Length: 141
Image (tube, rainbow, N blue to C red; front, side, top):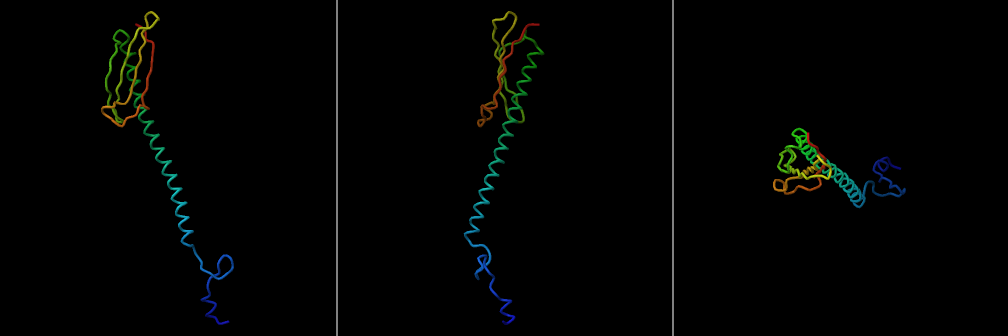
């Protein structure tokens, strides 16, 4: 055997027969499809996490607006408690709040319902999922 034939010998395939080494086009395409599918799954998870974070932020802003309205009711008492509404501007959007006061069956107590929801006029893409409502019994001081 000549030394040059040893150097330039064709590589052996996995099956032991002489052939080409490396990946075929089909194997490469299958690998690309598998990788793309995995990346789409990761992207989907990232989008869902971002949407959940946004919903949580909006719900927190609605809850803070509700807490402010309840604090006003506690601070000013029932003597000034009346049905009214307004808009509160926050960093996560505008919130429309409404206080509905009704008489209750219990003497000296009023039934107050506070509703906070996204202001549809200011934010047409707002959803009702961040709306919060609280109903409380409030007595005179």
